[in-house]
Length: 99
Image (cartoon, rainbow, N blue to C red; front, side):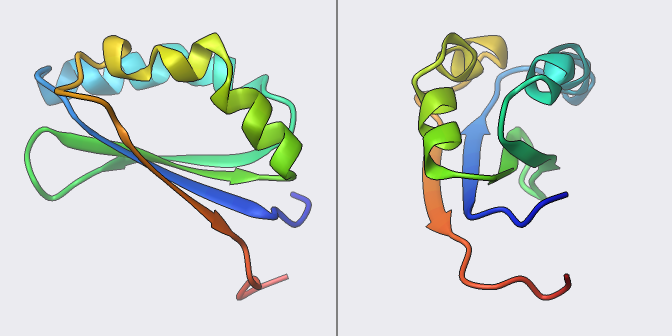
């Protein structure tokens, strides 16, 4: 993995049960694997029931913006039957702990 320059945390509440959320994560994973510039994505499950998220590590700002403007990004809430819109926090990677 090359050094990512941007990190994005997406969080949402879902009305689906855990098994359905995990199934949807698995079904959509190939689309994320194919994204240009996405170095890594971690699928997250909150300790609070019904809350899930994704932590993305992007190679560049352009790659991240291209994804954020895509149909794949626009369908996150609908795919997981989200309650409201997902929250999105964008960070610039200041430094890695490990090489």
